Length: 380
Image 1: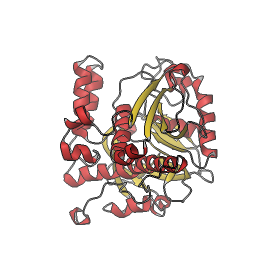
Image 2: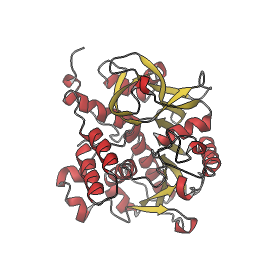
Image 3: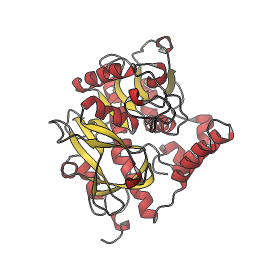
Image 4: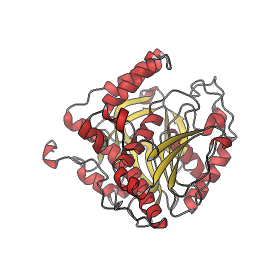
């Protein structure tokens, strides 16, 4: 299980229930639906903002993002404890509660947006029309989120990583693509393991070029998908916005018209993406653990059988061979897990310097990605 923390790998899943190194105060989670639920900022706590876009729908992605953060924090927990520094993850209910995090510069410098149901334009979610998935929402949250995105883009030390629905909202914010409901000509909703392809810009990118080098043909990647809408570019992307990936029309097929990954800004060193979005689910890894979460949700009556069966099919879908499963892990590593760890570790290092408690952490040198032997690759 390549995305488990080292503690869980050494001691097993049960050890985390009683002696997790990332338990509070090293890493805590705070749910925010009202402003009065946000506790005061504290110098020794690094506050991260999760933009929960699920509108109250049951989901696996939100929990998977929290697990990814906690796993990353666990791996540096000894250094954090020594310096008396911890993390707090604030999960803001954006769509149904209109909860909005502070702009960067004060409490938050890292924002992570989740997937979610319904149309990517909240005005189209009337609960009845095709594509709204039964969601009826107040769209008044959107201008505030767009303003937040503007502030993140303008702040060179702030980062935004966006998954699925948040990727679509980012595309609306930038005005670069239209959400098009996938019709029968594309097989309807895209679910399970599908393929995307890297652009020329990605192959030349200082971070994604490493991803390309690790892929068998240096272009085609496997992704775990749950995509109701395609994002179709309105034309050439504006300067400063880089297309990193597009869909393919079937495994091994030609490039399609749907944009699947974009970079909007890069970190100060010019290597890691600072504002980056994907239209797949790179947070959904370690499928055996997520299956346990799914079974519990169904057993407790939290989800319908239809919802449960669709997610179960995705999580149990076989890949052609072990190499195929490795490709999914590799995609998650480069398109979410690696950048997430980089920004978390950077914040920890900088907070230690600020407090005069330097940590032995270097976000540029720590292992950030899932690796496997190139000799395991199939022959071309």
